[in-house]
Image (cartoon, rainbow, N blue to C red; front, top):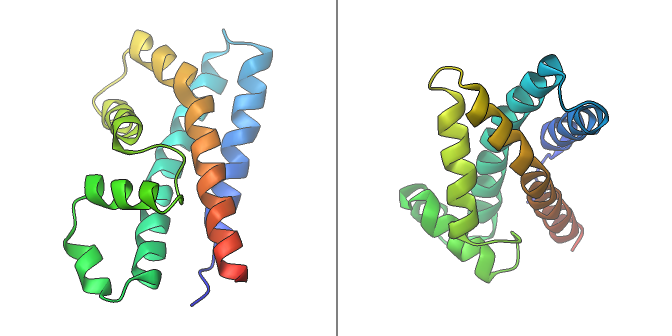
Length: 135
């Protein structure tokens, strides 16, 4: 079953666009906030896309629904679908949670500084799913 990755790819492109602008001027709070908002929906879409992918290759898709995200990430890592295992994804998850608990400039700066690693992670995920879709 081929997954439609259009929305995920578009989301990744928008995050890349914001990160590129942020690199030009790291004092621009408007761009920093844009990076964070784009990270939020990219993180959410990456989870959904990964779960859909894992269900598509599973003998029992309902089993994937019953799994915790941490176990899905660990399994995806063992399969080479994601670049990092749960230890890194847990940081992304924590950053995503922190974005919804009010605004704190120090936290925002920390999150944005970690976004290039997350961006590389989701590009890796997209490329692997695309490659597996072609097989």
